[in-house]
Image 1 (tube, rainbow, N blue to C red):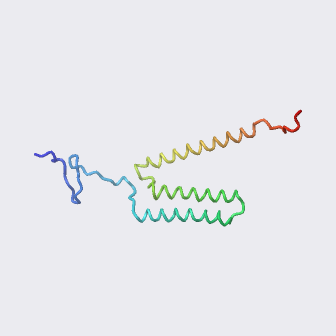
Image 2 (image 1 turned 120 degrees about the vertical axis):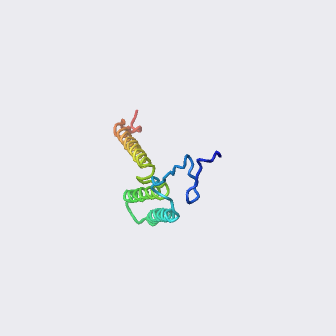
Image 3 (image 1 turned 180 degrees about the vertical axis):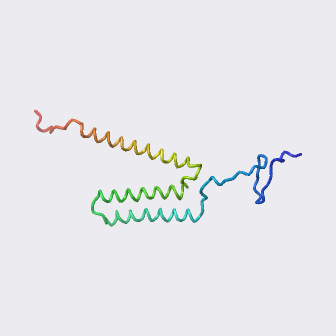
Length: 136
């Protein structure tokens, strides 16, 4: 008997090692395709070109409104990259990748909100700067 007695081939020529157990890969949840990558690429180009056009033509006069519009485009582009290039969805790895993403977002939001809160309170509670020209 040979050492390959547990190494069998299925009808498609794929190896089924380890006693002939067929390992199902249905839990992957997403299979990358050229069409998916092209859609992601086109969406990324569009989501980059529109804000570039808005900034270069100064279409929005208010800098605050422009900043909000740019942040919205950036957030949408992050989602596009996560879906089309990182293949993030609730089915991949049994949902653990999505759970880790949610945890990461929560930590980043807490850190950013805390940092802004600390900076705001440091700014409002600092001693006032006196005019040095009137000093004796």
